Length: 386
Image (cartoon, rainbow, N blue to C red; front, side, top):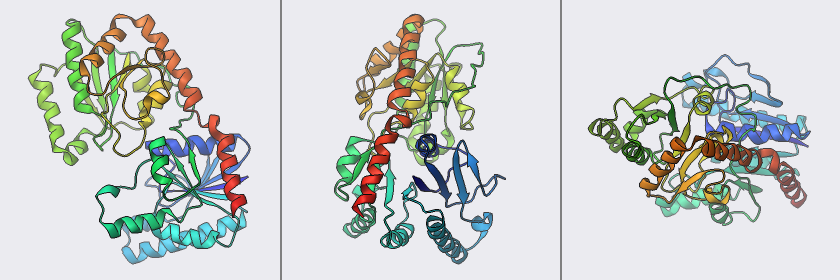
């Protein structure tokens, strides 16, 4: 089959959404399907306008001048991009259009276009619509209208499946996915001091402060020569959006952790695997996922084969088993998180076994190839319904 995927960004791979898109686009290509990603916004790098990335074709549909033009020019570029998608779909006899770019103008245009064809239009939703529950009645109605434009919806959690079932009877649950070769060819970088690594975003959903508090408790338990703690993410931007996070620096200083907690800042996405695979422990302590989504970092953590310490938030326990492939604590039980870190420190042999089991779990349960056949059958069923 031939698929087109519409995405805001894709190559170069630079964020979690790109990793998700590429994981299942690549698995579809490896299964013998032709996949083309049509990228709405131009790249800021010198990457060619079209090409092939690990078996997946890509095409930028807007010129680089998009960012420097006024709103009228941008509207023109958007319209010409939509016409390009229409022409591309017809010329290449595309069987289905998937989308990770949720824009009502794009959706209305493509809905009108595919209405005269057998091509289903499918959206991938990894969160609730932004701010949906705080919207006015009218704003919600507009969002509801937009969501009903699709032939089917792909979701990342059972919670989202329940929510989006209000707008479509055709829902496919595709768990968090990651390419199983993410760490292929990457070697550990020797470090003079063993460390715990923690990656975080700027949405303040990772429980960063809680992780630092748990780390402090661990330091008190171990007393001598604790692992260092590396915080990987755009801390300055996080604090701009959530000023309360500035208290993390204060907490670090007041508890004498300045020499133990290192805020590395935002790192290039292609260097993060080296940081993770070279760590002695990986940590994440979310309290909940108000977005309805799933911690995309978890798959990458597990795939690294480094032992993972986490809180049991959201649907994490649907995919992993405490003590076998991960060390889980109840949400909010930071003393237990500290004890799990201590276990990794004091029992490296047992912890490494847990890490290796985690890698096997990731390669099975978070491997897009595991779900490829079912995804294709879902798309075919939508095509037959048109």
